[in-house]
Length: 172
Image (cartoon, rainbow, N blue to C red):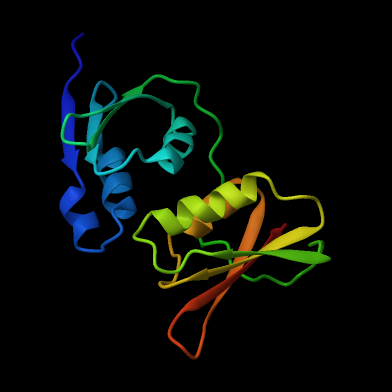
């Protein structure tokens, strides 16, 4: 059986300041079992690797001569159980949730998507116990909530008077 390749170029969305995550995930959802996804992006989409690995995709990435990145996602990796995604991870009742005793400040303002999310997830990867994150962004980080949920965290975002957004992140 030969596999077909579905091409998706998200460079234009990113250049226009739009977040391509929804478009990428929609394309993945429509893939047939034998199809691969070839993604072209202006950067290596590191957070996407773990998201698609949980859906059973392995990846191979390479930087093109133009400086852009080509990533081919192939079905058949080790599929892990998906977490429930009926609603984004947002503030909840607080029952059984540990409140952080301290916070790390992450200022991701002035960065183009998806760099704010990448910066926040990098800080999350090295977060000490009983510590939360206060992330400052220019946009409401809608695509961050799924990543938080997958890692056992919740986030609550509020718009600030200057038009920026502050997201408080803590362990569930």
